[in-house]
Amino acid sequence: MADSSPPPDTDTEQPLIAHLAELRNRLLRSLACVFVIFLGLSVFANDIYALVAGPLLAQLPEQSSMIATEVAAPFLVPFKLTFFVAVLVSVPYLLYQAWAFVAPGLYQNERRLVLPLISSSVLLFYLGIAFAFYIVFPLLFAFLTSTAPVGVTVMTDIGHYLNFILKMFFAFGVAFEVPIAIILLVWTGIATVESLAKKRPYIIVGAFTAGMLLTPPDIISQVMLAVPVWLLFELGLILGRFVKRRADDTPEDSASAAE
Image 1 (tube, rainbow, N blue to C red):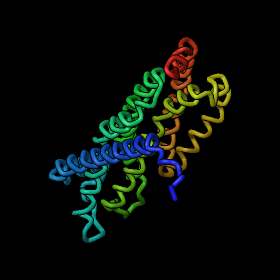
Image 2 (cartoon, rainbow, N blue to C red):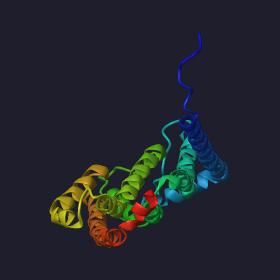
Image 3 (cartoon, rainbow, N blue to C red):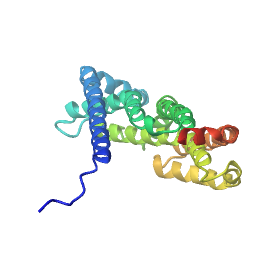
């Protein structure tokens, strides 16, 4: 008896397999990039940690120093920080691989907007980390070390310090992405610049709430996170008006690309 089942749909299966193979290759390239950079930086692991610990060490009393409360911490903690730095350095290449994977499926007007957004988001994330390291940390550690009670010597564990700074780097890096979030909300039509502007009081309260939750319980770091978020929100509104105007001026791009 002849088999009457329909033949497999090779037209849909083959592109799916090709896409999965391309995704695998780009993931492998991304992992290789992080690994190679990590190997190159691992030689300087202790120097990198000393550099990152500089803002705290500069504020410690002369008789104080950082300590390691775990046996393997002096070896492992600098390498953990080095791996984080390797990922951070690799971000442009990682985003390029992501862009190269999704770009063929985007319309022309989407390509013109997405690529600048990706580049700007990387730059803003780096700026957030730099702001935390060069501006927030010196003021924060000067305040925290000066509040130690009499007879208490400040000696911070290197592992706890690493966890603290990574949390702060992430908080400030994400906080500096506010303009990108505003642009995406306006571009996708989820919100308008006018509706977001009316929510300004709630945004300000939310910025200070985020500062309270994401930073240590001191007024300095909370304010220094909340104020940039508010200012970046205002910048996002300005850029959102520009993006909306550009989208209204070129509505035919998406239609022509769809054809």
